Structures are given as C-alpha cells and as structure tokens.
Image (cartoon, rainbow, N blue to C red; front, side, top):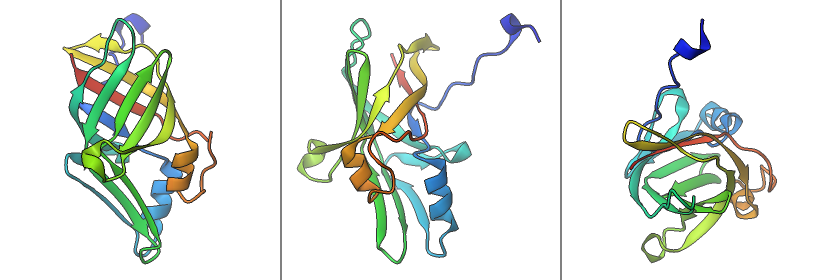
Amino acid sequence: MNPASASPDPLPPLGLSWGIKRSFIDYITGLPDGSVSAAGGATVAEHSLFCFSPESSDYDLARGTGVLRFRGDVRLAGHHGMLLVRLLDPWITFTSGSGVLSISTGDGGGQDRTAVAFLSPSQPRATDGSLVWDHVDVVISPEGSELFDGQYAAGQPMDPLFIRVAV
C-alpha cells in the first residue's frame, strides 16, 4: 500500500481516553470479586479504554500550556474491598514541554487534586475541528504509585493516553 494513500488513524472519542495499565486491568477482571465501573461522564470504550468526557479547557495552542478538564468516575476494585483505585475528574495541566495528569480527591468541589502521572506530550494535531494528542507517554508519579498501593514504582511507564478536545 502506498503510504500517501493510507488512511489516517481513526480519531479517538472526544475527551480523555486511557487504558491505565493493561496488566492491572487484566488482574482486576481476573479476580473472583473484581469490578470495573465507569460513571458520571466516564465510559468504557472498545479495547477497554476508559473515556472521560470533556469538561472545559484553557489550553493555549500557541504556547502549548494550560489545563484540559475532564469529568467521570472510574473505580477498580477487588479483594473484598481491600483494593480500590478511583480516578475522579481527571485534568491535564500542560507546561512547557510536559504535562501532569491529576485527579480530584473528592474534596473541595474538584479543586483538591493529586498528581498521578507525568506526561510527555507532543504538539497536538488539528483535525475535524478538534485538537488530538495521540499515544501520549505516561509515567506514574510518586502519588500515583501510592494510589496503586506501590504496585507500580514512581517513574514506571503506564499505558499511553489519547486526548481529543473541540477547538
């Protein structure tokens, strides 16, 4: 096939799509009492990606800085309540050349946040009235390591994420 005629990658759904860590999701779903739920603006899409709905943004395309806000509540549980990972209302804060994925702690109306991962985003591509970041590299933060009860050390790669927001 001629590369020039190859169709582009399909667009991810609007919002933030992240599979977290495939091995962790497989572990949870393999538990006798394992459960995975998505609510409040979050859904589970094809390929077990968790999709968080876009909320608002103040992203400055020229500078590559700002905040993208998403809403949704993903919960992964097992071991008779001893294991619970909750990802609530994620935000991505872009600074010059890097990004931080944070989640709400559930206090303070979403303003109290915990940084769970560091991102290495490239410049987004503009397509069909959207900005799209494909295959963004993610590494877990020290706080993210705590969220996963130390199962993943700070700095360990997680699954890539995808972002699509309306321009």
